Image 1 (cartoon, rainbow, N blue to C red):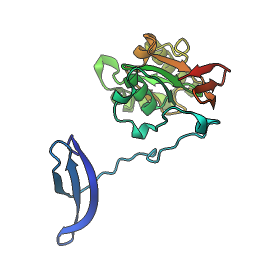
Image 2 (image 1 turned 180 degrees about the vertical axis):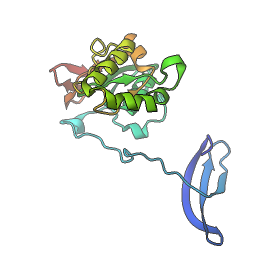
Image 3 (image 1 turned 60 degrees about the vertical axis):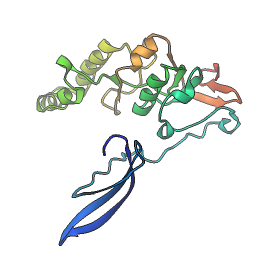
Length: 217
C-alpha cells in the first residue's frame, strides 16, 4: 500500500477469463481522492494479534484517566506533558513507550520482563539476517540448548544489562519471541521511561503495583 493511503475495501473479481484478481479501493488522505487498483495477489498481514485485548484489571472501571489499546495509538501529540503508563512490554508496548517518552513521563508496566534485541547486528547487518542463517541453525542443533542460551544472554546483556534495567525475565531467550527495540534502553537510561512491576489494581487517579507501591497518573 502506498504511503498516505488506507484500505477501504477489497473485492475478488474476474478481470480476464479464468484469472482471479483483486480490486482494491483505497483513500488517499493527502487529496481525499479514492483510488481503484487491480492486483493479481493480495497479502493480508494483520498478524495473530489483530483483535485488541484490554486486560480486566481490578478497579479499571473506576479509573478516571484515558484508557486506549495500542491499536488505537497513532501519534504522541495527545499525550504531551502527561504521566502515561504503558502496560506490556511486547514490540508494540516498547515502541509506544519509547515514542511517548519524548513528550511525557512514561511508566512501563511488565509482569515478567523481556529480552530486548537490537535491530542491527554485527557490521550493521539486520539482526534477523545474521541470526537466522544456515550456519547458526547448524550450530544451534549442534550445541546444547543451555549453552546456546548462555551465549545468547551474554550477547544481549552486552548491549543492555537486563538486570540493572529491571527487564530480566525468568524465561530463557529462546522461550518467547523477543522485543526488538533500539530506542527503549536509551529512554530508560535517561529516566524518561521507568520500568515498573505488574499492576495489582487501579484507583480513580492511578494504580497499585504488585510490590504494593502506589503510582499516581
